[in-house]
Length: 223
Image (cartoon, rainbow, N blue to C red; front, top):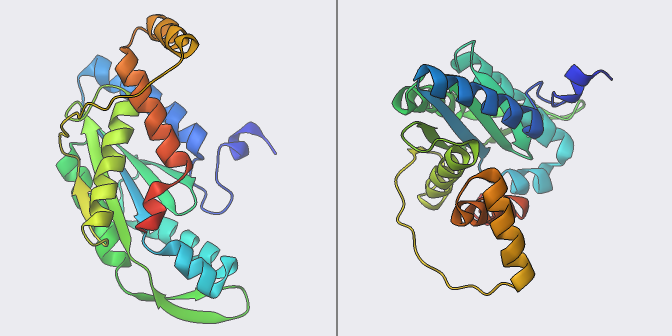
């Protein structure tokens, strides 16, 4: 398998998580240099784990393929699509304000919001799966990949807790202090990393927490 194929999800044809973030960083840097807007949308199939447990992974795979095709039908040709793992998709909209990106993903959600047929290769079932999503943008919601992704994930979380089957736009969130205790070695290494990356220590800690929450997919309890 060549490198190009390694960067593509075999099921949907979308970019893998790693390949998408790499390309996102490149396009974000270009947008910063040119003073252009850029938006992303993170979307997640609601109750997908329950669907898989009920009907089986083969039906789930067919649902993911059909979801990917629905995205292709409604987003601009120059948009960059990725599969972030499981049932989570991400779309990068170039030269696009977040309101315009919201409308594009809302069209996907509305088209998807019907009962569909899914197949495991032998049998066919009819079922309805819905979509929730969050939209964030540069420069409104951040100037780094981590910041913008975090804002989009927060908007997705808000869509889930608000009842699912909806798309939410990122909002400014108030920072809340939380006391924690670290070893001297941890703090020393954190300070060194912050110095090397030329970013505040607090930003690195928030990025680490985002990775932890994504690793254990906290939103799955709401999905």
